[in-house]
Amino acid sequence: MENFQDKIFLERLDDLFLIALLKQDDEDILEELQSNPDPGLDQHLNLIKRLNTQAKAKIQQSKQQKIFAKIELIVNNLSDYAATLTLPQYSKLNVFFSNYNEMSKEDKNDIIMDNLLLDLLDEIDNND
Image 1: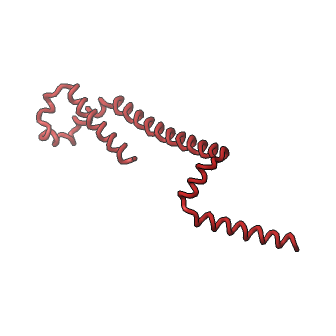
Image 2: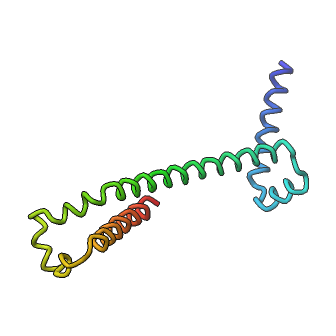
Image 3: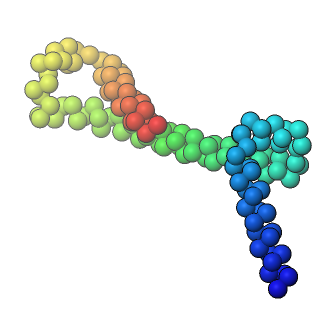
């Protein structure tokens, strides 16, 4: 019976400690932690920081890989995009681009590349 009462006493004492900690200001807790550093706690916090940094780096690397893959796709298919503009359904747009036929192939490719890169940048902004 005494063990049971000891157990109840310890549970109530634990509850009181928890209540005392909850009523303590965050600044007081932080000050106490800084004045009594715990190497084990610091080690765990450093591990959490390192894992967080690694996760952010992986996310950034994944975004960069997607961007480079998209740029490579654009560059590899540039002639296809230029050929698309000569299709009959786009002939109505010639009114807006009256100088298009007089432009060099390089200028046309530059315009297409700029437009595709702007679309890519817009997509990157929307993903962030």
